[in-house]
Amino acid sequence: MHRTFSAAKLDFYAGKSMLRVVVVLVLIAVTVGMAVHGPDYAMMLVMVFGVTSGGSVFSVHEKSHSDKLYGILPLKKSEMIMGRYLYALAIGVAYIILAAILGFIIARVTGTSVSALNYWATLAVGFTYFGFATGVAFPLYFKFSFAKAYVFTMIPMYLLAVLFLIVTRKTNFVSNLGQIARFFTAHLYLAPLCGLVGGLLLLAISALISNALYTGHEI
Image (cartoon, rainbow, N blue to C red):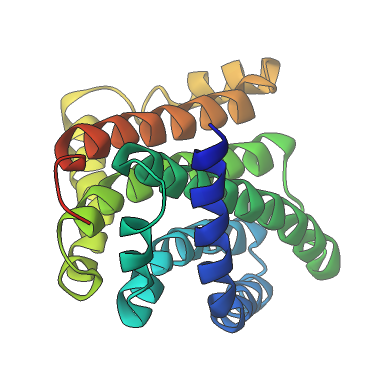
């Protein structure tokens, strides 16, 4: 486990070079949120940008050829992969906390009224999306170069759009939204809990897939 944390630490140091880009992305999210008086828009944008930030470590390693360093370190490939996902989880947690803080501040500054359910549901959806999008992108990054795989990182958005259309057409999801909202209003704690469990589960499944597929792949 110690070596897995060491691998995650290496990714953290590599990711530090992206701090300027992170600041710019966060400013974009804040600007959009302030312009439309929509803290929920800013919160979701922060989580979308979080996926970009989490995956950027692949680009950094590729450009600097630091990924070759793993080949001379006493790290199993499975430990390197788990360390990469541990780094992604840390990024996701950091971004969801940032989204929560920014959403609260934007709501106060713009005088926008945001219900507790909308606030927590946005965070829940944002973290679940982070787990889903990161879970789809990381196996691709392990398999292909960052430049080749980056074009496929929009796949999660397309998949979600198609899934939403299918669900709305084949089920009574839209007509049941009122009941769903009333349920989560009465059990507010379940909204962030579902988001947390959903995001973690998606990351865990992706990590197992990456480990199963690529531990035999030479680094």
